[in-house]
Image (cartoon, rainbow, N blue to C red; front, side, top):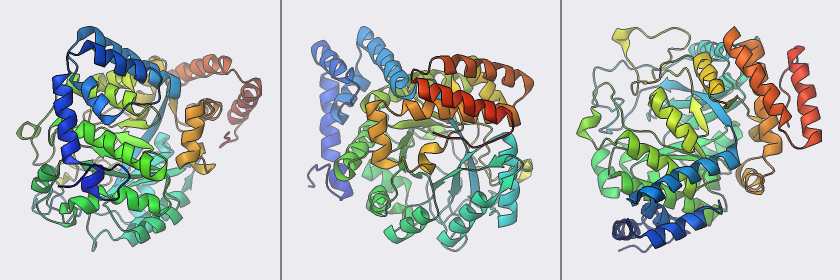
Length: 473
């Protein structure tokens, strides 16, 4: 039986089943242990994170007063490190050809009635211009695993195409990549192509469940998939994004697993994941969440709060899988990035996909346009941010984390968020959104404490109004 070792490169040692089971048993035994839970909350209040075992106890906690404190603390941590900034992005599905047999994904090889599509470089150009016309600056590209239809060369060519398109005042300034686990050599090629974050969802950390859910195809290799982030970081990719698909297996196991993964990356590379995504299983072409382990909104919200407390420095992402109501709640509890105006079909931005040609990976619940989402965020006092400055200034990996931990990042992030919001308002916003946004910018400029930063940000914002673009701290 393998032994738990967060510094190990072996999947079964850094995501150790025995350690997870012990943590879950410990949490079950202590779910009403007020003294222990209060001690964990006291530690968490230092905002330096808590262990996977302590996180398991908070998730299991049944004490009403302490559960209120968990929620309150998650909000305080979110406010301290991320303020009111919410980073905006959109997914772009390049191809849904896939040779895997994943039981929860409609892209699986045996699904013969989904429309199979792959965008040409010209179609990618059209999609990107449509996304730029919406106001997006940051994309997450996605593709099924198929070495014939979607070889790495196709992904690299697509990234080059995306970065090359300058349409009106539009430009995609950061391309994050969500593709299958690959080799160190291939990760080096992605790094050289100028990607932002490499994203890979674990789906489930339980090896037995993983192997049952991935019966065929290269993704069926649990260890190779779980160790992918190590290879990406060895290849020089500073920013990696982890994720787990809540509802595939038991959510308590998954929560402990994803925090252990963050602890492992911190222990081995000195920096944890740049982001953690928390998608939930939702209806898709031939997938019914009720047949899996779907979780309630209340449990989902508590998961978000506990992850925020456990890994205060890591960005958290929620997609349009979730409804407006759920997204509103989890934004408050720790989410720092959301998608807006998303399509989960292959293409669909330049021209809406006909109903009979459904190529979507999952059903979108929040169907609002980007402008409607930006308007909604502004109405709640948030700052929708289209910022990509840290990536372009080389503030990635441990450099980004050290700035975040010291609190210095606010001198970059706050003005950059306001400047990119100003760009959006000038170039893309509806009149109502523009009015709300200008008010938020005026208010937020006033509370920048560094006088030099405040003066420079004000000057840059005036220059943006005069027609200039792409200022950054």
